[in-house]
Length: 401
Length: 168
Image 1 (cartoon, chains in turn green, yellow):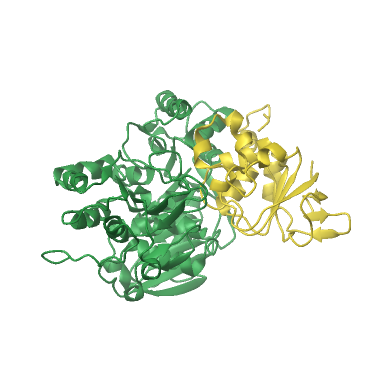
Image 2 (cartoon, helix red, strand yellow; image 1 turned 135 degrees about the vertical axis):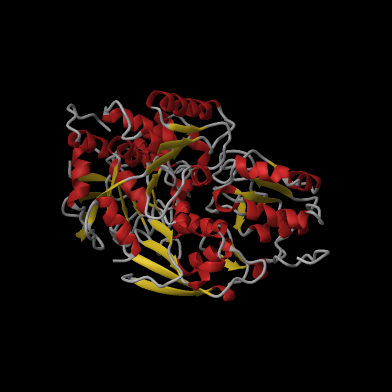
């Protein structure tokens, strides 16, 4: 068995499992947010039990539409607040950050734990070796009632990383290279694991970015393993990290990936740095390093959205917020921001947006014809300064990069 | 209940959840979701045109993207009775089944046309057009059991020994 199968067998109370087998696993954590949670709560109430399986293992986070952009959005907050009070579960309210970041910061994630979340980017926790499975609201309701999840054991695809990334290249470029390879459905119903000596130099932030976008290839699970190769996997893909260049997903698909160099010069109107994909401290540090010496282009709105309040607090203490603001960036409250098209920075058909978020489907961030390019924070910040898509490393820094 | 008859609506590959139900509609009260069905797609007025019982026929990777269950809920509320696609994204497929909206896998785009009335035998996975019968993949026993129970919630109620099955 590979390590995914070992973890699943343990959670199912079985000695062994095989690909395709239907199993029932115990879950260690169940999570939802203000968009998926209310529907899960309604379904939970339809089940008709008077308690959740374990209140300490149920978490809800208000992150998608906070502060409430509409009256109905606020009504959804209230559904979560009332449920948390009635059932004694943990609620992160008042802009603590994006669900995946908040969970990582507060819940001691451990390899082999089973996390189910009503958000497709739940797979982010795979950076910690967690089996993190994205589900819908009804399945979440069932998991809250029973403490279990029914799944079929997935086929496992191993990405075996060697070498080291070049300067200015990061986790986002790695995962975009994988989406280019596998396409938007190449890993549907499968688990993707990341192994190999290349892991040594990959930060936790980079690992979270990579797992986060596992769903963009259709994966059921995205999970980091060891520096050594896996046994018992269906397929292994070699990924020499030193060969990866700065990449961007062009409109209108995360799989429409091209080297940034091939689209450099495309004028942009807005740049977004943040989200559960790239709103962490090392992402912010890349932006600050450039904006210490350069200003945001006059024709560009640069939105900076820290993934959590903790990250924002560190940025403030380090003096980064002042640097960002003085350079012309707008810092919003931690949360999902405009990523999923509800508020805080949507585009019209006139907008060309370069964003560090995870999706660029038609209408994802506003108008159906608004163009969204997905790229790394390093590409984003130089693009914001130049007003056009720019290969990272183009701007020279006094005192070196 | 395992035979469905309806008119066909055609969609292509990779119809994502932002097309099925745009983010701006996500804060809508659940009872009003039907009016936004496919509002972000190439047929933005789908919800006005679709008739009760109609069938969506699509290409690869239908429902990719977000985990929002509001997407299949909106389609069901708008009147859609079945989705047949070459393939589905995992979360959408499970969400649809869990709320009792059947999904079938099959390559139908060459075999049926927009607006055509077809009949589908879910148990045997057979699509019947005016001219012929086409095989799609039949639903698994597990999936048929959830649909027969009227969705996952009813199935969980049965497992937990709670009486009085409710409508999903």
